[in-house]
Amino acid sequence: MDTAIIYKGRQYDIYAVTHGDRSRVVEFIDNLQKKDQEKVVALLRKSADHGLPANPERFHKLKGVDISEFKSFQVRLLCFRDKDRLIILTHGFIKKGNSTPKSEIERAVNIRKQYFEDKKGKKR
Image: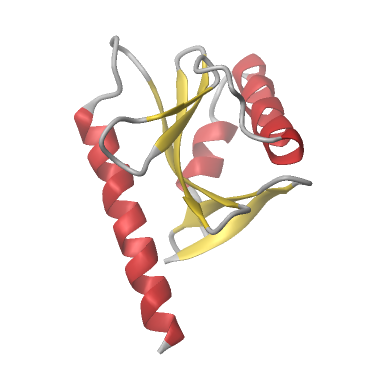
């Protein structure tokens, strides 16, 4: 599984999972309305430069899994950490209900698992 740099900051480097030459995260962000797009990009840049938001309305670790989510109103970007400085974005979606759908969490968990399996395999 490959990744592409989204933003290199003073605190964190944010990457997106890629499939071939495509990134679903980048495509998701590109397809948002301009206002939402600007807010999400600003949230990612601020997080990369100044650290993860303490405000759970902007960043939240999901219970029971090693997955977190960046939040901007209904827009969600699921992610996980690799080492101290790396944040890996798995995918994005528009939240429609009160909680993050299990299917979205499972998708992120599976991507995370594959990422670390591939990474371990490359070290051999």
